[in-house]
Image 1 (cartoon, one colour):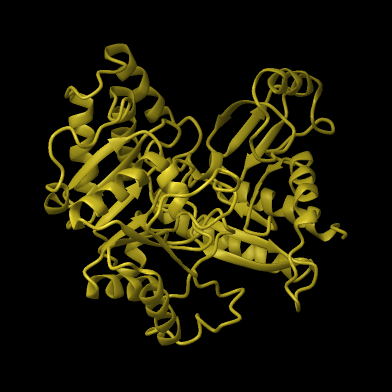
Image 2 (cartoon, one colour):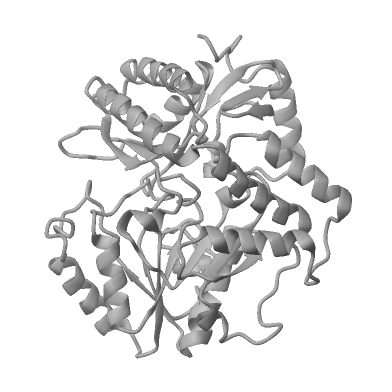
Length: 440
């Protein structure tokens, strides 16, 4: 087509050789991806070592929101790395600027931040904050949630994978069901905006499971890893009020939902949420490893000097990246493009769903969507066996996609926020070609 160019079936000869070397020396424990070796990327276009070019619908797992290798971000990282690479807890000019820039960009009630390295690390910090501030230890979380693979994050997560066969999880987790409009046998999504049936169930769950040491709630604006499940409109706002009424701290995990991904700068803006604590990652550095936990001065005041730290958190290069990414958002209309192109791509996918008997649901907002595949649209029986062929056939035609889902039957749609109409049209044409030839 115009942008993509795949010369032969994947993997190409150089990719095949390098993949064999990779698997020889590094443990093969990552998820399934299309068989190619990335060499470079710009914006939404990826090139592999065999000279093939692809349109990227992954953003490196919702990371490169400003596009791959944005020149302003690259220059900021270069400049910082020539000055200083790391200085642990000592102040540096880049870290101070990053903290000021981030806090000024946040909703006004959040006036403090703390930098770490990964989303998991930031979630662990949020759990410590909730427990330390309240003096209690029980955390309410949700089935299907993913907050990371470290012990605390995996414990509050609601997926089996990060915990299976690793022994006991951290005590004090009360897990409730997350409302899923596509799969809602109990009718939890039907009676908004009060959602009386759901919150009666939540009260029952807490009343029967709690030992009386409730600290807070941790929730994602949408559940990415379990299949891009978006709760019904108004549910998050009701949950926030429910937590406030019980004097519980409310942590919103925006690790993959912020920085324009949902068509707003922060996902909390969709329902005017005022969380006590917010966790950011992925897009905050758009390829540079950095995360942050953000809250209020009053909540952070529960910690004494030395009670929170990170070896690489707030290092100069990461901090320069934080500043550069926010500057890019100030200069480029990435949030508006996310909303506009997200609607355009979603409409295109919904049209394709009319032609594909296995595409049961297209859901999402902005440039984060899930395509759920089923054996039959009436029964909604999951069809995970379709996912690997879709990934491979899309790649062979020039489109890179990945998979998620509690049942392993969802394709993620999350291109960089720089995607334009030409790239959207070409990638939609590839997806239509693949899905209309799909057979169980």
